[in-house]
Image 1 (cartoon, rainbow, N blue to C red):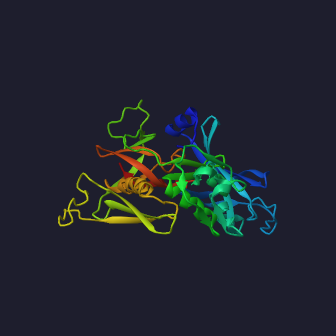
Image 2 (image 1 turned 135 degrees about the vertical axis):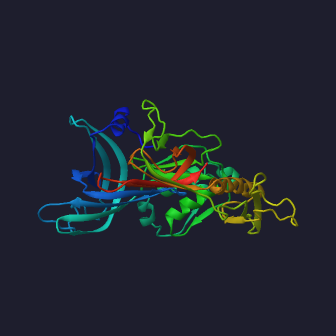
Image 3 (image 1 turned 60 degrees about the vertical axis):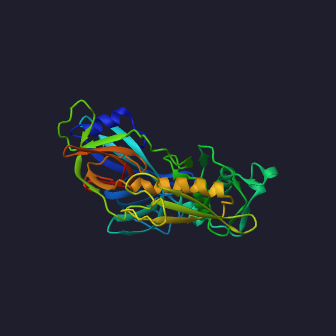
Length: 378
């Protein structure tokens, strides 16, 4: 959940509040524009191994507007925008939430309006492709004597100088070496997948790396309701416009088979299986369950042992199983605090669900429609 003051939350609940968006523009550490007004638009965020977001917004401008000028606040020469949602009360009080940084991509301007397009800062990793292949081993390993590959140090090596990076959790060492040919971002993804970690850019613009969270008994950070029977003092928001839970027979794998490569180049395997419930993997080869066998596969050159493959398989399967209870889609009044990977409680028509948010489309202005978010039921 994005950081927000208690007063922001109170204004969000109250009547007669103006909801608006403004943008700062920066170039090479220099502030080019402090408060560009946003007429309309959407910030769409998606959860993945590396979380991403895209901005599509209309920004008015006056006078001459030369997009070829490298110091144009809305140019695409490395300019970054930082978006804010402002809530203004009837008395003029303003509370804000920062939505984070984005790099402007080529956009169009006509008739006094700039159709702004921008991407999250992991775009910088995509652009910073490697000129020559890099082998990540002892030179960036914390344990060269044991020939173990230290993923945290390697991630810092790939990202430092492009984005600030913070590794918040202890990541397990890996055997062997990683060859990053050209795609720096894919090298980061390969490491994250091998050690069951994820990454996202926080509101300060740093790439934050964490282990995949344990969702065994999660607590919701926000609650959305249709207001039925709600206690007015509870803080629950009666804002759900529509809630659509969905379940289908093709919702998930019930086994994960992981292949790695030994130091000698031979294949090595490990697996994990669903052992309980209606999606359980058939215990015997000649036994066919109602759900059946539905294995998924994963390959990583960073996994060198059976134990490593099994550990990766268990983590990957746990992620796949998040969809076992079904999925949901919600339309609700905008709440800019909501982020992907938030656990939320959803109540409508006397039914209550717990969900993990995997995509959010946040309107940037009051006239840009409702907020839509979707994810998996827990």
